[in-house]
Amino acid sequence: MSEPLAERLRPRTLDDYIGQQHLVGEGAVLRRMIDSGRISSFILWGPPGVGKTTLAQIIAHRLETPFYTLSAVTSGVKDVRDVIEKAQKGRFFNEASPILFIDEIHRFSKSQQDSLLGAVERGIVTLIGATTENPSFEVIRPLLSRCQLYVLKSLEKDDLLKLLERAVTKDLILKERHIDLKETGAMLRYSGGDARKLLNILELVVESESGDVVVTDELVVARLQQNPLAYDKDGEMHYDIISAFIKSIRGSDPDAALYWMARMIEGGEDPQFIARRMVISASEDIGLANPNALLLANAAFDTVMKIGWPEARIALAECAVYLATSAKSNSAYLGIDAALALVRETGNQPVPLHIRNAPTQLMKQLGYHDGYKYPHDYPGHFTPQQYLPDALTDKRLWHGQHNPAEEKLWQRMINYWGKRFEE
Image 1 (cartoon, one colour):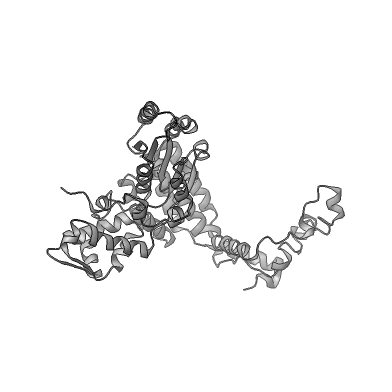
Image 2 (cartoon, one colour):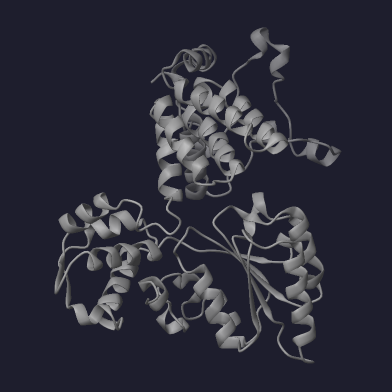
């Protein structure tokens, strides 16, 4: 039985590597490090199928150094120590450190990560970790501080088209089939920037046909509907399903939210991953329409950390239903994004003198804090004064949305500020 197409096409050199030019293009940071022949420990963070494992293997091959691989899903502390011992015994004086590649490092427990620290610190191994999760949540701080972090992006359309062209012209098996890529829109859409998923879709479509193959969007959709899980590595479309779950909450459908949560639970999803996404949803999609949502989501996250499966499913379900049935608002989400855009556009605007702190006599003489009105000294604990920088006094960033909870906040702002908040 032949290897899967994605494995047959795995690049062996940086010249064949597609995408991530911000890291491996000419003059880019990882390219310079590799060309120098010495690399330091780093973590690759990005979605599935963008080349994390491939990049680690190319680096090891290019540097001609021993390469050890561990999967965080199947390896324990003993496995980590065994690899470190092998690396230590097999290393010669002044030789580059062996590379230890840990896939899905976010699934390593604290004790497993602790067992790596000493070896990384002493240079016994050079650690390359790969993760689909934000390392600041999942990797212990001492280990993270000893590693550079490089972010990989989903492959863009041109990258994916280049990959398809390479598959049908270079792969020993596919090039014998005379494949005509007449339409590629459906394959690109279903792949979601994931190279492995794209190649699995192509292979599924080709294997379903006999003789020469003309790939059309209609053919791709038909084959995937007949076999909807076949193109997914683990039989569960991790990112598609979490997307469906969050969109069901945002769309106020508790039944759909519970269904997609059940799919994740049955697929072996990490309960912390589900809980963390609900904390994000509570602030992004519900926000000020029901501030209690964020409190409940945090409580659900804490409960998951304390009790684990299977009881954690109940707390997760309670939270999912509550979020789905809550009123929705994204005003805070839109407000902070508008503020960030304004800061990037206008730069470092000076703080008005009257709201600067004045801890020294010199600062007082320069007018710091002069004219500041203490709101608690005024009726209703409010008095109008300028808080934005001089050049931005007319800017509006938060726009209240018309749900019962936020309507009260908006009306209070109109009472305080008058026309500034009238829309």
